[in-house]
Image: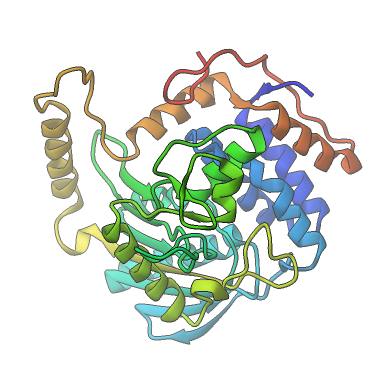
Length: 363
């Protein structure tokens, strides 16, 4: 099987059809597929359609509910708690975001805690929706134990990502979407699948020794960014998304890939603030543009061609991949073709992929 370049529309249709074949309602299948393709568009391929194989396997094993009964279990208007009934993470997170956006005009700020859900992918997908609706968004999600407490050896915390997004005026929203580890574990998984080594400083092996072997890293622990600072933030994310919501936390969260006997019970914490509750929207947008322009025009260090804002490189990658297509490595193409074979569904390439630049965009 060869590497391909595929249009985002064709890729989403292919993935959506596979998910619907495995029991998801068409609308929910579309949501999950859209969230995965969005990650590929941004160049975050570790969180994209490479996850389809494990998503389908967990559906087949009954470890994820294809048609969950997502319900509100506590409701105080501006704050509520959702039980995801073990539904697909993207479906549950999208439902939580919809509720928060519906209530935002009335309350000014809305917080939704979520328990009993699954991996929701890239937080930027949801945060950008909120920012486009005029909200400042803060999202936290916990994850299976893959990171040792600072100074420890055995994993306890997850990579526990957090996402912030705010709207702007002439510019697209500023989006900070990052794991609390040096790197998202999905990138190490991708390196292991491709037989590639990982950079120094990403992980330790099972004995606490630094390693550049991706498989040894998966058997050991990823490292927090900034040492004790990243560890502290990872801990707080787990408290807010896990302990507070009643979801799993620490080692109580099922591993997406290795724990094929029980549901994950991931937690999430979503907070939206209506910008208009503080400043007129146009005033805020103008002030954001002013800040962005000042940062972009700041004096650059030697060898730096451009100063980027959080999420800007990913946005440019998305713009080019929308135009030119999404490059898929051979192993991902093979996985998707295998998943699509019961439906007689096959990916239609737009072209063979050429070399990519430093931002993962095909030239």
